[in-house]
Length: 136
Image 1 (tube, rainbow, N blue to C red):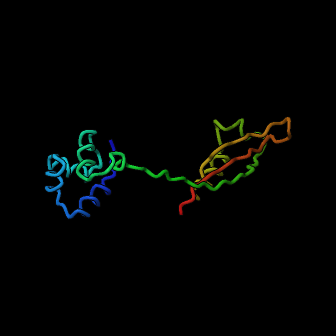
Image 2: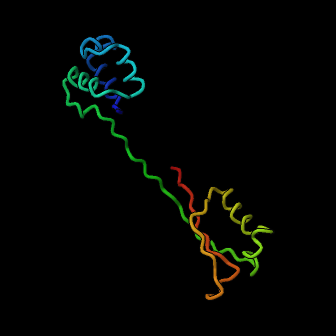
Image 3: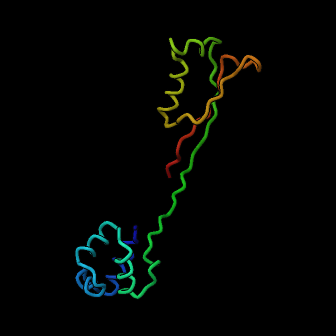
């Protein structure tokens, strides 16, 4: 299981303990202490031993991963082509692909596509919804 290795290191250094001294206080092998601090993984038995040595609740050692919320920017674009663009998609020319690839060069990716129909007079066009991650 995952453990807050930074907390273990902080608790150990706050007490001015070496890894060997923590090993003695907890009854764990020094290599186990080294692995816990380096890899942040631990068995339940070792976790109980550390909590006892530090005189803290066992759950205080739990690793709390912060969820990182990604932010996206969205854009909708109407791509207009001659009426036959979708019929010749298998033979080309690929103007539609070229237009999407142009947006991709600027970091946009296709989120959704709605192809126009003749019922609504939209044949030969498509509405493309694009997104890209906002890096802060």
